[in-house]
Amino acid sequence: MAGAMEVEPMPADPLRDHDALRGYLNHIGYRGATDPSLATLIPLSRLHMDAFVYENIDVQLGRPVTRDPRAAFAKMVGGGRGGWCFEYNGLFAWMLELAGFRVLHLAGGVMREAAGDRMVGNHLVPVVVLDRLYLADVAMGVMPVPLVEGPIEQGWRRYALERTRDGWWRFRNHPGALPPSFDFSLDCQDAELLDRQSEFLQTNPHSPFVRHAIMQCFLADRIETLVGTAYSVPDATGERVAMLRTRDDYGRVLRERFGLYVPALDALWGRVSLAPQTGFLDGMDEAA
Image 1 (cartoon, one colour):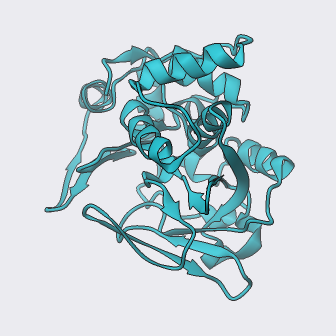
Image 2 (image 1 turned 180 degrees about the vertical axis):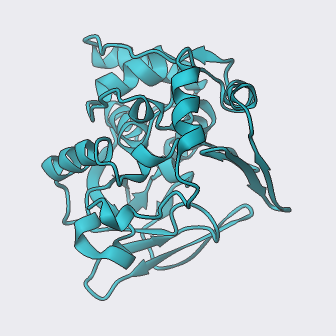
């Protein structure tokens, strides 16, 4: 991760496409070809995850978040921030398109397996069209995956792609990872639904993103996760967990492990320290 950056909202300035792509590639440290190929998609995916944190600080602080990828660019590239799935995957999909890739912006459903179709639209799922279809969901920490049923091994992580009885795809996450699964359909490209769910998830009191702060770094050899006051690091050897008891400890982990310096740390810690002591996804079926 880059050094700690100040967390402040940044406006999305108009950008020429060429300048945006060049700025993004410089930020993530990519120096290779930009032709729309699997050989390009793989390193872009890895470098995107190395460069950006998955985080919902703005939602926690009551700052409106848009799905406009230019706003995500200003925040994440210009401001050294991260973002939640609509920003994290949205920026990645836009950059791929500027490089000449064809990307499907699918309205996926985290926990659709448990709560049904009302969950559809709560997750933006990028699928890249090459010689075949590839799931390119960097917000889940996943390298490009061909859309083929079966188990998936990426280093120490074990995933699976399944077909549901109603013809949707189901991505089953690594055991113990968040979320356990999400569903998507190639026929469900619904920008208005994604907009509605994005607004809902950042304002509804039952939303896990309103109830809990979450930060994640998806690194090649480990995942670093901070949900509320629980800091965990799963890797090939198991999982290490530490509970953060003080504001200073919380701020230190944000800076040192996630590269985030938060001027509004008192306000953020006030929410985190009083958040429900439940699992991140507990109650999500109520927020639908």
